[in-house]
Image (cartoon, rainbow, N blue to C red; front, side, top):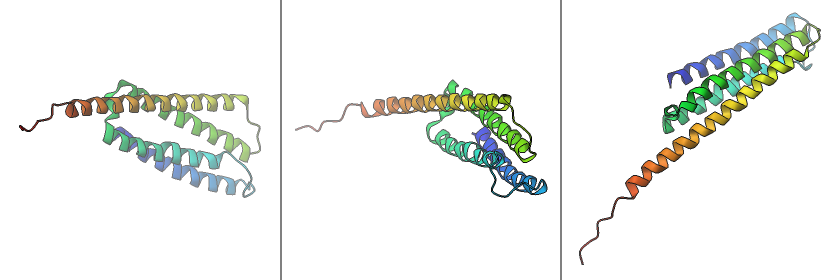
Length: 153
């Protein structure tokens, strides 16, 4: 649970700092305000996919003990690798755009790999959640399946 808290906090800090970088880097380089760049997307990806999603997963972990499943560890590392890789490519592509340089297909390919890792992580999260729900349902069935006391007539 502590790993989720620390990762969520780190993404919050990275998201805020990436927003600051976006604003200042575009100003310093005379980039037209409102012109499209991937730098703004890195800010929202880090805050949403990193900070907010991991806070929600932290609550799910508290309620359902998701980490009891081995799949949860795989979720955590694959998902975080996907967030970092995707955000890094957004920043790299955004910097190139602001500097007026051409992007390459390599950046798109690496970003695509990041999205694949994110997707795999989300699938593993849902599998972990499904197992936890099944485990809780089975535990609930044991307690409700106890024989009822019947009053004597």
